[in-house]
Image (cartoon, rainbow, N blue to C red; front, side):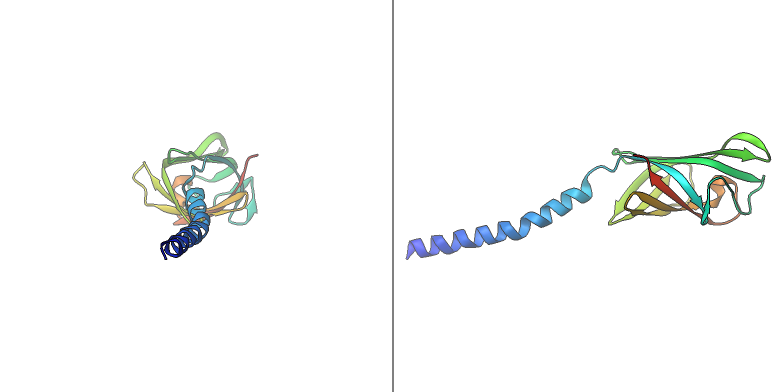
Length: 147
């Protein structure tokens, strides 16, 4: 009788391990650091270089980079022209977190939080307009991962 109980207990433990193992690996995959560099591709559906809508001074972004580091920090940097003068035209940095495939960006510059969606090889961000001198509340930007 004791061997039957031991056999059932062993079967239960094996079954539980088989069911829990995939869940544990999914959880650890979600918690792995996301360290990436992304290059700006589009602003509101227009390929870069592109004018920032409703910007003052008039901003044209020629390049942009987003980085997310494993320590939870992020940065966005944009270069281009401001009323025809070349240079950095916007930036932000702070702390990021991710739930499922949605990034939450918490600016260290006292700006409201904003979000991004992680896709295969890209990230779509609803960047705050004020970061690039726009009166639009948010500006849709797509970044592709740099390989």
